[in-house]
Image (cartoon, rainbow, N blue to C red; front, side, top):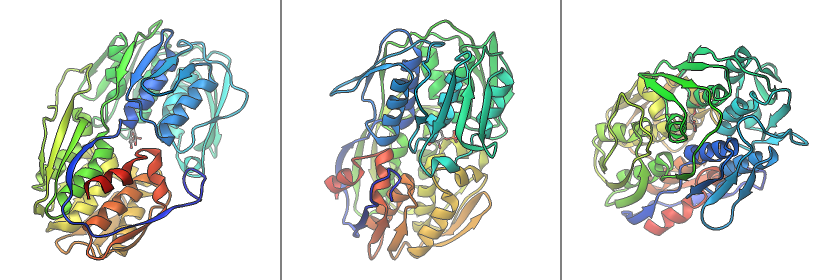
Length: 438
Ligand code: S3P
């Protein structure tokens, strides 16, 4: 069975000649989730232009509906008519988050503020292995009641309360956990502060600032003051830098390629992968946002102009990990083609993604001919020889499936991906887009 519950689809990707052409990047998954959730928490309608229509973000619309929001999802913008910060309705049964970890971690922040009402979140087999203890701890400290299977795994039960503001330090940088606390803080009784060891993606902070919420960031410490309502109005979702990364990798790896990927979000907290590629001497021309002390309200975009070229190995350390977390499998793939060694460390979080991505990357690429070793918190690749090809098991994980497809195009003998259908949770048109430029 696939991640979505249907039959698994296997697909072969043959070695390709140079890729050429232009692709509109699919809409950003992280920003789509946030726009739908903040829309559901608003009292005024929110119009979301270029909402990602994929399995994960459909789960968010469905969750919002079950909590009382009205959603118009036809052609064009999605319109969310929300319930207000404190007025989510108790649904008849469990809320099904499907395969969406971001929904699983962020939604409890809002639910925790629904005084006296109870909710259950559950999802597919992969979701039942995703830990939620890191959201349980801060929300309990704020006054809500939460229970999970073995204290750690879904189903997750939340009973809301009148919340206290807290000061909370995350041990591991996580945008999902940070966002969960920030959503709860909107209805707490004062100013809440969340700090992280290093910065993670800041889409929630930017959207809250745009919605008129008093929010500030200093370094990796964010403070937010409670509010009565969100005034978001309109959101335009940019292209997804993490989805675009698969096209970037294909363009960099396949000899003779020149690709333009249009309308990609280049928020500094999402472009760690592009900086890593450039450090590996990969050719990507783009107008990337610079790091800034000030919290920005906008989500900047740029086209990415990518060309094939020789690569050099690199080292990715812990402070860079949250800025490229979903693209680290691709760093391993690029490492197979780079001169010298490519090392990723401080990335233990990869073990609790849609699959254990350290095991999936190491076993998957080794089966295609890579010289790769796994460690507790990353991997090391000896590159230069490229990949022979073979069969890669996506393990129900969209990012492993898409990595396998790109590996096939760059390989000498082609790659069969077991479970290519997994890509549908974040990038439903991935295979079509590749076909269009092959
Ligand atoms: C996400 C944050 C990241 C990332 C995930 C999406 C988000 O997870 O891996 O795909 O939208 O906030 P963590 O914040 O748990 O590292």
